[in-house]
Image (cartoon, rainbow, N blue to C red; front, side):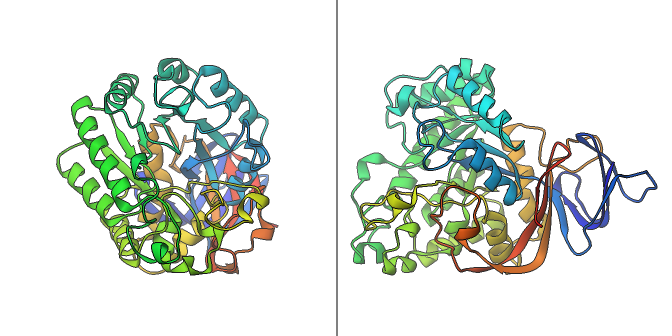
Length: 422
């Protein structure tokens, strides 16, 4: 028995926000509240939050094929340090996660790691080339939690409709990487600072066109559509409209879209290059408002590690992507809770409880009888983000040197301590 005492327990699934004790035995939470049970370990969580382990719906672990960037093992270490107990890895690996053999490979490598739950996301099409559907049914048998063409978009609407029908029948969400690939080469954010700095990328219209198309297809197929990494005001407005029509749709954003705007690009730092790109200050405001209103349902990282040499080149030549597993809670707490945009309950819900609901997994709750995936965080601890301290293989963060609050003290997975901040 492990007793976690005097922490502020926040559990949106049961609407609990109370200073109390949590008792863990074996893999499960066995009691919440005072008690006199014998315990082999007592953890004093006074002044700290005790929350259900964070569920990150959108990460890139790079293995197989790009182990110089990240591996499943190092990604799991980074997740544990960030308080993340479950994460969904995207299929743009080499070979692509487009068949049951690669799904089983991911599962087996995750079992060899530190215990953090890793759930693969299957590709929509074979090889992510957009021509032929992958064997979605077989991948579901081996444990995928959804399908996505992440890093690309299925541009053939008829093929996307067919994929949605399969997903509906299998009870899988469709993760939409909403970017019209025919607009590549336009201004990174439709004529704002990025164009001034000579940086090219995908404009807001690229995001909004595919959100609109995929909502229409979801309406007629009845599948659940999840929009990844929303970055623009127009995207927010479309999602709000889709929800008003009763379409089964949820959405996520990432910390960089509510903490940074495109004005930071003037130093040409390749660590600030991601896809979708940073937008304008008005878009940042829209993302924060959407989180507050519940239009955006979840916060994910889109953790996209790259080797130092890949990012250490001119911004126009560097690959897209930043890492986020070790910084997501602190950034979210600092920029959303401390500023009054979200309550504690709302923040935990968007980082844990609602992502678990979208995925249809029994996670995101601290309650008696539930698996003990939980995180203890010293929310009063202020520190400076230092990429040299990361346990990820990668260092490509735009947040190096930023002051934040919220340091993870312990991460539990299935009752086991997988991270302890000494």
